[in-house]
Length: 354
Image 1 (cartoon, one colour):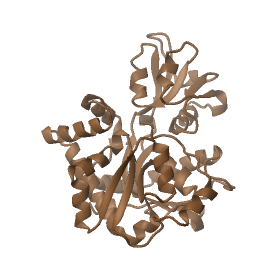
Image 2 (cartoon, one colour):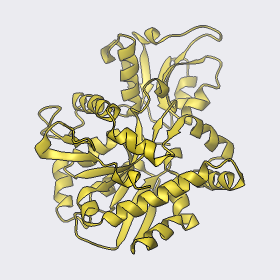
Image 3 (cartoon, helix red, strand yellow):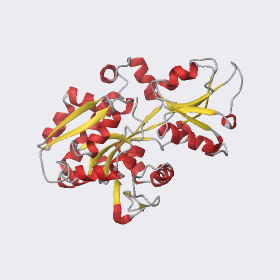
Image 4 (cartoon, rainbow, N blue to C red):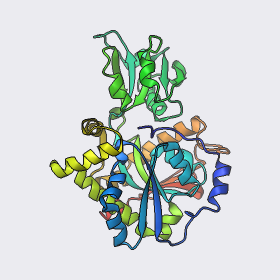
């Protein structure tokens, strides 16, 4: 589940590649989407394996290939470079990589939000109480410039603290469980399945998790805006396939269990583990709910927090002189930042059509 990295990509380089990108527009019939392993994105490989993706593509006279990436960072970079028409990505990374790199990008599916998958965990004596305020003066191990750092920032804010009140220790997600087991590590911020593993320890106490900031860590499907404008059938086919799979996987019967079992297998997990991860993942199963969230007041407020965090940490690209350097547009017509430089858009129409 290593989807949560901020990926640094030099804007000038991205623009140079995109200028000759095959995804820069024009009507076509063959498309590719890039996906990486995360519980909320596993419907995509299932859609391809089951034939559901092909069924919807055939309906619109196009072909769509879903391509797996073991490296989430590389999937976003390949999309940004124009090798793919769409990619699975978090709201934060959509802003800090393709949008910051000059690629006009549209989110057409609000897939889910983390509802406990991410947590700040303190070490305490078994049975002892721990609180957010106990973070002050401590070192916190985490993947720096990631959603974990964003989560920690929000936790500190709610405790009346700042990032300067703690010491950040950059630690890879692969090493975070082992790090917490060492005597000198007193706090971590991480995501599932590492959260689940760490909390099995008697000295681990979760003092903050993403259920406290619902809707802020979003998992999306985004499409190159020019490609989408020239090929609206792509958006319709992707949304149709997505919601058919979600309806199937959430059925409380053998067919639903079979679909989730295949998704678990594709992600290298057991069905029990996959279902456990789903418990802390708020899937927008109903497309009307997804569209409503995209068009509501909560999303602009979330993206305002995200863009301010990203700018403060130097993630809006070279030459970004202010938090308003990149425009973010919403279905309501509201624009955050520079309306003359909109590079990230949230579009509810494909969700509303399902």
